[in-house]
Image: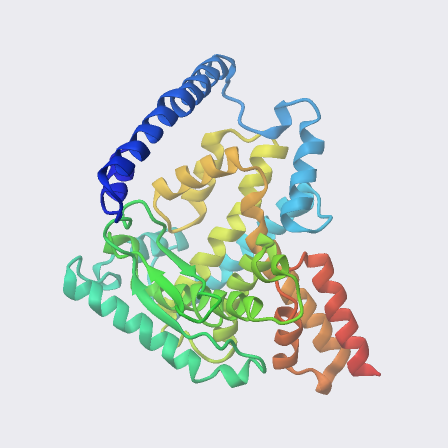
Length: 388
């Protein structure tokens, strides 16, 4: 109400009209909003009395069918909970092995768990939590983006018209916002795409993750995919501005890997950062299916994150609570990445010398966000046309 009054009082209208508007808003709050909230609160209080400590979808009637339906909707594949769980376990093991290689490369004495603790706590990986440190983070992130911009011709034929900038999350929302995210450009070209870095707490932004975050949220990640999609011509708006998380976040996670294949991540600690972010997404496959299909407890899920990743325990708590209330949602990222990689390698095998990574990326991006099974058909059609 206070916000509404402030806005009304700034309007260029007479006082009587202002008074009338404020009276109408007051009536709406009392007659509609407050009773609705009271009804919701009463319902939640009754629901709380029925709640128990079993957190998975399996506990409900037809819970297994419900969860598998949610997985199909989220991943846009026909993978079962058991298959996704096994994929997650295999990916966690592979990534752990690659992390051990980095541990040995930098000469760290100790096991992988000790190395993860070192990466999490050593001061060399954190910039000062002051204005100078935050400005340095933004400068370094911008340098990474600018370097990648200069190499886009190696990866893409079609590129977005819209530019992209790096920006700090504003003070008014940084405490509640995520650590990094992308805001798409204005369709009319009046605003560029923005990679937002949340610098509220510099201890949450280790420098070894800076490179992978910039590639995921910026270029060649979400900016390339989302900005190109909304600039497409001859497709309906839902194809430009809609989304399938497995496709969008699958591309984002895939975009963390592509720079590695281009010879970037020269600092082994940055490569560890890339792997730590991929590891987090792989663990999601294990824990989400563990809770909803294999009767894991909340604490078992939290412990899995604590024991297998370098992230803070509080990250594990938040992620498990997300799994509980959003069954299947967090499985989409890694499944999407793996499908894009699978399609790329299949096309490479089929086409041999005719395979062009730039053309492949065009096929992935030129139709806007699509279900993964539709993307598979697009890639198959492209391979067939190249072979013909």
